[in-house]
Length: 208
Image 1 (spheres, one colour):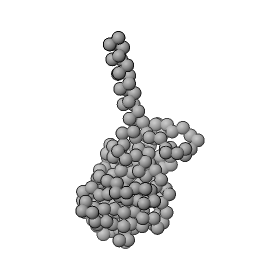
Image 2: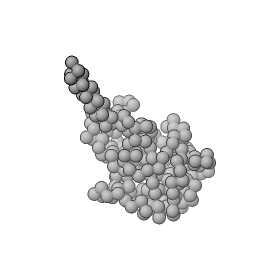
Image 3: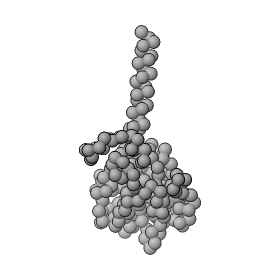
Image 4: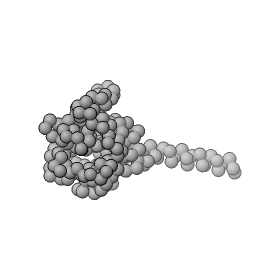
């Protein structure tokens, strides 16, 4: 009896571990295709990697952003997406993104630095263990004029206004570089659900 109980507990434990590795499902029906974990593996690559899988040198981004640093954890609010003061830790790995659900890409800019490009990466779905799932699930609904607000660790607020959106390949790391003549924020997620073959970038310009 005890042996069968141990076997049952082992099976349940393995099942839970397996579930934690699976992607979260969409909030609503979005496609007639089944959501397959093998498809979702395309999402497990941070934008900023060079062709062949080699990660772009963070020093390149830092130099391009004129020495931008992390400046501590910032918070993000996007009223149209229902996001308010979401903590955005700094990181540069897929492990960190999968755990947190949203990160400020290390080596990219910070809002308080003129001429920088602050890159914020968030999951459209995430995983069962992700702290903030679905954070950019509706990123594609943002339109020119929509508001993006960032606060630094001292509570200073920086207001951005959406002005552009583009879809790129995972290896198109150039979108992490500054935009000439602007101080911008770039919100990034994987698209389309459920294949996640591309990266959607929504950009806002600092207005206050």
